[in-house]
Image (cartoon, rainbow, N blue to C red; front, side, top):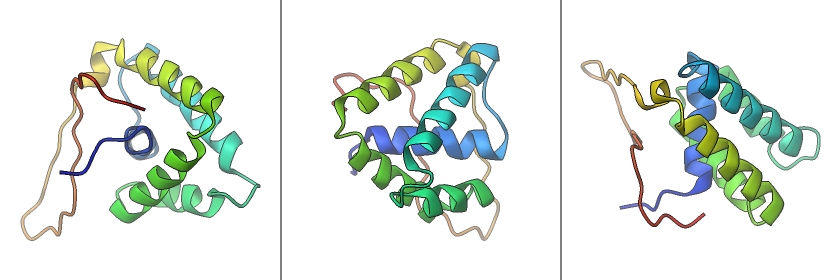
Length: 125
């Protein structure tokens, strides 16, 4: 089983936000802050702006989600960036609506990975 990383969590949240929006008002604010933080970090510096644009254009593309996740994991080596992400993830998780989701897999679909994160104990970011 692949480990869940901060990049996986953030890329999944971005994908959801780009596709349909998320949760209630508190979650929307936190996720929009995550989008802004990630855009500010990746756009225009050659460290992921192309991948982030691809995710925004096609939020259901598992390869795009994975690519952005890997880039965020690399950027999260910066303690300040990682702590900002962790705080915003925690803020978003306070909204109960953020914990509701529906996953539809249509017949004949080619599904790679589906990541549904509820509660994780002892995760290291």
